[in-house]
Structures are given as C-alpha cells and as structure tokens.
Image 1 (cartoon, rainbow, N blue to C red):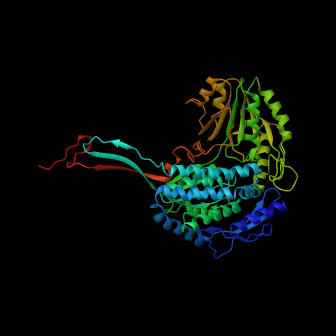
Image 2 (image 1 turned 45 degrees about the horizontal axis):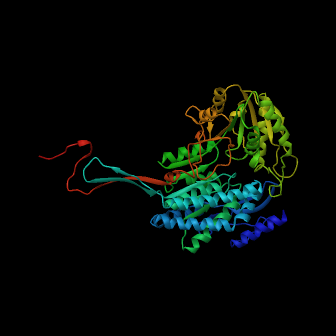
Length: 518
C-alpha cells in the first residue's frame, strides 16, 4: 500500500497539489478554477475502505464558499453560452485528452478511495474519456427540426438554448464517471456545472477538479467546471433549492431522490434522477448456461454489489435451477476478495461501516423471513469493510427481495413459465436494468416487447451491469425516470424554443382564424 500512496501523492503533485497522504493533510473543498479557503475549517476525512484507515482530509465548503462558487458559475454561464458549440466541444476534447494523461493514477485513486478493483477503476476513467469523445461529436449535432407552416411565406423551426448552471450530485459508487456523464454534455450544450460529490469519495473529486482547472486555465476560462464539497444537509439543500440552478442531476437513494424532485419542482426547476435499482436476470430452460453463469457472477459480485445495475434477483426456470445454483456455489469460493489494488482480486470492500451494517441487517431480515442462505452471509474478519458474497434461496414472498441492499446479496427464485417470470421480474418498485438469457427468439422478443421488462435497460444474453455511453442510461418507476449519456439525453441540459418567421407581406393567422377591423 505504501507504493500506491506514493504514486497517488506523486499524481497530486503533478496536478500542482501537495497532499500528505495518510497524515490527513487538509485541502480545500470549493473551487471555481481557483481554490477557495472557507472561513471555518470543517474537515471531511476520506477513509480507505480496504483498511478502515484515513487517507487524507478535505476542508468542506461553508455557506460563503458555496455562494462564491455559485455566483462564479452563474457569471461564467453568461459568456460560456455565447461560445459556439463546436468551440465548446474543443474544450471538452482537451479535457478528455487530459484525462488520458492521468488515467492510470486517477484509476488507482478511484480504487483506493472507493474500493472497486483496479480494472474497474481504470474502466471508470475510460468512461469519462469516452463521454468526452461522445460530447465532442454532439457539439456539432445539437439539431432542431424545421417544420412546414400552414401559413403562406412562413418558416417554422425548433432550436435549443443552454439552460444555465447545472447542479450535479454524485454517489460514491461511480465517484467520477457520473460527473462526466453530466458535465461533458452540459459543457457542449453551453451550461456551467457545480458538482457536489459524495462525502465518501472527496479525493477523486478534488483530483478531477484539478484536471479541469488545468484545461480551463489554458483557455483563460473560469467557472465552467466547479466543485463544492460538503454535507447534503447544507451544500446539497442549498443547491436543490437555489433558483440559479435550473437543473439538478441527482444520483442516490429513492428516498433522497423524491426529496430532490419535490424541492426542484416546487420552484419549477428540473431534475434528472438516477435512483434505486433492483435488477434481475431471467434464465430460460434453453439458455447458454456457460454464458449466463459468467454474466451472473460479474453482475452480482462486481464492485461488491454496489452498482446501481448490480444483479439482485435471479429467476431460474425450474428445469435448470439446481444446475445453475450448483455452478454458482462452485464458482463463488473462487472469487478472490481483498485489497482492490492487488493483482488477481475480483471483489473489494463495501464503502463504509454503514454499508456493512446494512448488509448484516438485511441478512438478519432474510433469515427471519424464511430465506435460505446457500453461500456466504457474514462479515469477513479483517481490517476494512469486507463481507462475503451471498446467495439466498428465496421463497416467492420474501419481502427483503423487494428492497435494494447495496451489497453482494443475490436472491434466487424458480419459475415455471415465462409469463410467471416476467410478472415476478416486474413486481418490484424499481425499474433500472434487466436481462434475459435465452436461445429462443420468441422469448427474447417477448422480454423486449411492451408486455416484457418494465425497466429502462433491457438486455438479451448479457448481464445487467456494464452499460455503454452510446445508449441512454436510466430507469423507470422509483428509479426516477432520468436519462444520462447517449441518444438524445443532451436535450435535458437545454431548453426548447419554437420559432416562426413571417417573410411575406401579409399576416395570416393559424387555424384559419379571422380577426380584421372594419
């Protein structure tokens, strides 16, 4: 670990920041391109989930620091929106290139602070890079259609305008990628952003902000990308109730997302909500089981079950249920659990003690409700926040399976018909990601049809996790209905305007209305 800490310290030094890792050296938690020193030092300690030990501490933003950042972001919007979109795209291109330079150390920092394995940490940074590339292309494709007017010598068309300051509230499980989903699109659309990261992962946010600062400084820009680190009850509450923020993108729990939606809509603001997921895979009798088992393992165990798209529920046709469970019981003991930065490790820790406590409480409830623990079911006695990946044979009425526990707990159900499986699949309140494994064209098409999966993401013969940025990401029901990345998600960051131009010499009214003075 000492070599890793040295690498991370060098990384911050390359960004112009002296950080004494492991000694809780303070840093600033509010930035508009230049770091702001709050009047009152309220420290937030970043904990290494693999050891439970502090990495470093951050000075959180106070009300005055928040106000400085928001004022600067609002002021920057007035000039940034007038920069031609392709030129805005060039700034985002440079940001992507800068992320390429720092991909390795930033990926290691993600693993160190959040706990996902090294390849996933690198993958998260690559997702940021991909998002920048995607946004650069969009900067020349912010199209609006032209419509035929019913009135002679009139032209109608739609165009899109930037919204303003976009508030981005991200969760610990993807500490940097989700910010990029929003910030890259918002930037090419002409918006500025203010980012409130998770209090569990402040160092990764500080690192990314430094990278943004390097790019902004080269172009004499300030206030396009901004960071405010602080508690949700202060910084978060101010942001969601701030009339200068027309759009808040929030990733987190359903309960908190409901609060964000209510607060923003009360002031007629907008929200993009990426909330809970209770994701499921259906495996049919004719499925390729080798393919299915591999997908189930990553979806259920990857990131220690802490992805929004992690597999929670598994529906197995009764004819192959024992065979699939047997394969899983054989595979689970081979999952290497440990320090996510060590070679060969496939599962790291949960993010903090609260997550461990939630895992333990969930298992107590599962046992009380009649669930049978087939594998795992306990905390691993070692430093850090490690738990066992767990398989539960679930009776149909198991209440805990209707809730999302952010941990590697997999509920296994049996079914007899595809109708029954789809009904069970759709019976929960969440609707993010779903998948079916089948060799039947009819079963696959049924799953993707109007009477199939009710989720925002539906896959055939791939798992529930690992979405690509080319497709819109998000879900329905209590997942919130938001969409980020891909498709036409850029429209959420802009306002639509319908324009009509009369280039003739008369003034006809629509729908044949006559209004003439005698």
